[in-house]
Image (tube, rainbow, N blue to C red; front, side, top):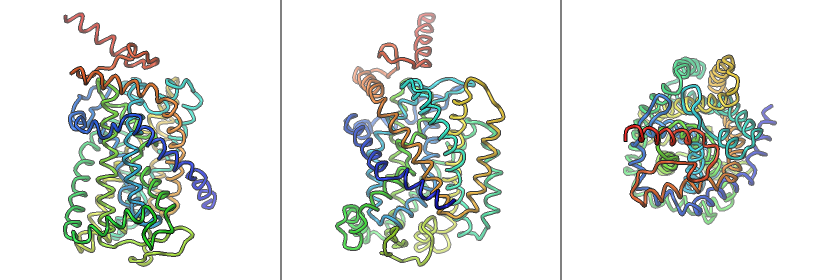
Length: 487
């Protein structure tokens, strides 16, 4: 079984997917004229703008719901595995896919908003919805929905749970079985409360934990500031194969950097549009810009914090698959949260392992919550014609079971299953957003032209000639009627 899982992961994560991820990100970065840089001044305003409603959540809640999916074990354990198998140069390629991926994140989040629907009293949207409405390919939409339910409901939660259990066992000596049981109980309480409860929990936990984690990283870097220039040089020289020790693993640096970068920031993967569609905004591009910024928060801030702590303290091994070991500073420790724990522990003895374990607990737990929301949204899409209550309960039971299973299984198997889930979704979503580039560009031009005219952008799909944006057509016409009544 494990051999088959490894083979399937290798097929999905062939060089073709690596090039597709980089190529799509580069295309959208150029096509949008570096939107992720040009609209930086709008980001803060848009992040805290907008109100939640009975059907939707605020932009800030949507940002944190998306971040709860992005900021997880990939930021702590994922960075460690990227360095372990791809060397320090993998960090540069994580930065690259984050910068380019912000363009892809804008497109998919904007499309999620354009084609969202109001279903069961709340906003629903995501790739399945924009594939059906924008591409008129129902079979493709169902395929994505089914793959996403399997990936986010069964394959991905185990990775997060495994890292939580590993970190807590290393820090406190608590067995994975006990941790897994506690996770199941806590998760059950939240997911049976619906999306609003998930959003409220994420809104509180994500900003607090991310800021605390970054502050600790800054302190560690400042305490080792003399080593910083050498670390930066090592990252860049390893990324381009010019370092003597890491010159022979350039391909591994690119592959692991992109793979773990996408796993962490999820740009183009098709997960973030679900949260983006739930936001209450006046124009789809607004939430697209906010979601582009979330990629920066995830990789350029949180992942970089982990990378610099590990590299500046020297607490890492590098053993590329199929090649001789290059660096061994930690003995036989398995790549994962233990690298980051060792890094913090080397500077703050007695504090590092517990702090990282707690950070990982909050990061990964909120990610599992986000996964449930994504799985539930796609299940709702599949069941939109006929409400099947039993499938909702089945999803909850399967997910809770996989959280416990992931807690007690080996990290290698958990990560491989997670890679299969991420890669499968990425293939389907990247192709879909490429085919839907035209309406996304139309929406961006409309947003920017209204900004230039000094207006607060409001979306009217009929005026732009965009079809099947049913929610927005109703919303815009209803708004005009209300103005006429009050005018």
